[in-house]
Length: 268
Image 1 (cartoon, rainbow, N blue to C red):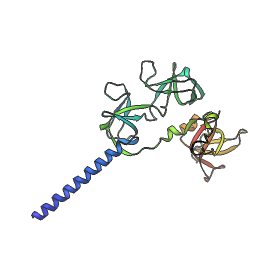
Image 2 (image 1 turned 90 degrees about the vertical axis):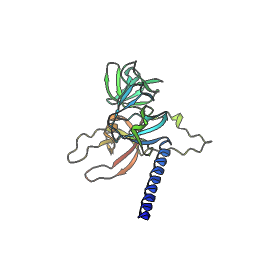
Image 3 (image 1 turned 120 degrees about the vertical axis):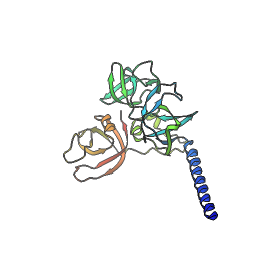
Image 4 (image 1 turned 30 degrees about the horizontal axis):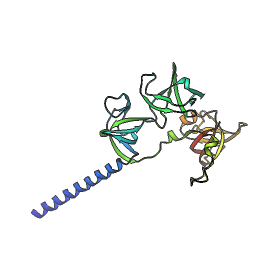
């Protein structure tokens, strides 16, 4: 009987040691920024700064995945989720289509609400692209840019996995001036990969018995490819000339190859 008791005690101690090791390992990984985390509660406030005195930006929900970039006291610095709305003065943006705009000057404030008393969440500079979601009075509702951050109490998130860049932030980028693209021969930076194709994006509308895909046309209006990507992103660049990176495939029922889009850059 005593032998059985000792065996059970040893098993329990071993389990506790393994759990403790796993907890410490996860904690060490979590403190190595950036990383991806999962929200472990419902309706959790995210704020504009690392304590309860800061403005509430919005709420995140159970199992929502967040990108964590730093920590102050008991608060994690997170990238504001892409589905959140932020605001910018419409006078400082040139609208290129119904859902895309380009910043026209430097140090433009991105705010939490459409008024000058609200919190400044980040700044944007001339040439930066914004995803426009609406307009009221002198304010545009936009998707949060990549450098737009908020804060969440550490007790509401758990380490999930290593960090990965959100494709929604990556897929639309402003083409840099040619001068910035010249390679410096004194450095060992790899040569930039050329785009797969350039053309003009057009919405295909609803297709009978097929998924709706945008088209890529040449300058004469000829169909080059169908484009498979997030609809919001493709809507944002509709009727604009773009360069596209991605993978080409053929699909039954389509009269042109399909590009699985990895990256889109607007051409001037």
